[in-house]
Length: 189
Length: 189
DNA sequence: GCTTTTAGCTAATCACATTAGCTTCTGTCC
DNA sequence: GGACAGAAGCTAATGTGATTAGCTAAAAGC
Image (tube, rainbow over all chains, first blue to last red; front, side, top):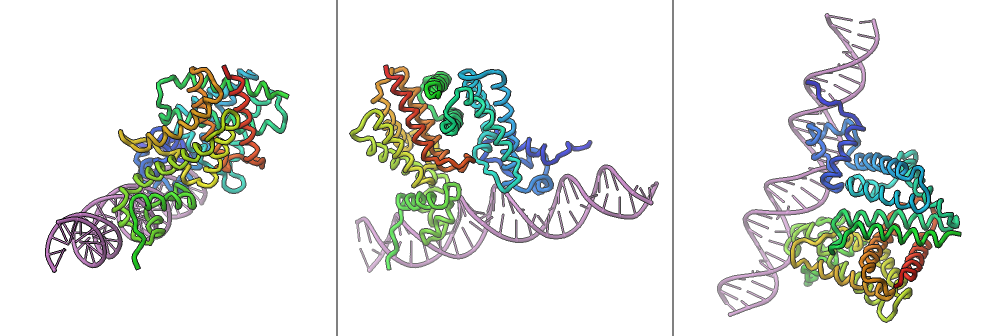
């Protein structure tokens, strides 16, 4: 019976799924090999090692997240687009904590790194959302950093179980998005 | 010549310093032992291992950060307090990246974990700052969660070279603080 | 002064990642 | 059909880091 055909991309996909299940920091060559019913050294025929694997997962996840944001904000604008983008990001972190950890830890390495365009596309979707607020060009970058960081931080904390008190995180999230929307509309030039 | 007296707390302090210098993820028993002019296994007489060490560093750093925030916000209120807290936080993350990484990754483990009260004190300072804005009681928790997210966002912005463009993080910080202050003053009940 | 504890050490073990070198399967070209 | 090149798997070996076991000497308590 012929074994599943491996290869860089299927190994990367399996690694991303594994990271979502056990946590990005526990993603290792040994565990992944067991998952793929293969001995550890065999993986080196498909990826360069642990660091390379993590980087590939980051590229994959950044691309997926970029697609999700683009889809979510397609055809809406302004406050609605902000809410949709925030929700999509939060959902992604929720459903794919390992992938998101890869996204947020990865650093581009060298020129021609596919992570660079993947990130550009991801930030592009958020930029498009913010364009709807018609901010000062000088403010747009700050706003971009804020929205990205805040939403990601909220989702990460929430996913990690960081909110102790028994008030629905959903409500807090909505409140926070509204807060940002109000502020951005007020900052409109 | 009598050797420096070791012990759990001095080892933890040395570990925190080491983490600040080489990065929290590179904090290891071997490196720390070399730093203390001791063989690796000797450290196990003072701390329980790598995980325990990381946790102790987190408790220490959370306490230090809590103190810093309390000191910074002592005697001021409202916008001033918010700005002071933000500045103190940023200084801490900037000067002690390893300590901050410990703070943000640590999770309380079991009952009686000293991390729990340390965190409570830290959140307490933030709560006190928010009190100055006299929000609806129903809004305060949401605001606290948002501020927490922004705290994490600050750190992300500061440490990660994650943002490609070359605009000073300093500017983005002050912009974010102003943004929050405006929003909180507007939400005042 | 003796005894018990403590803090250090060496040696051994375990878990990973990684590298080297062998083998087998597959698909291509004659 | 068969020889052969390359791909993809494997076992064995190496290196690093954490951890444990068990020994020894210094120091603290009586």
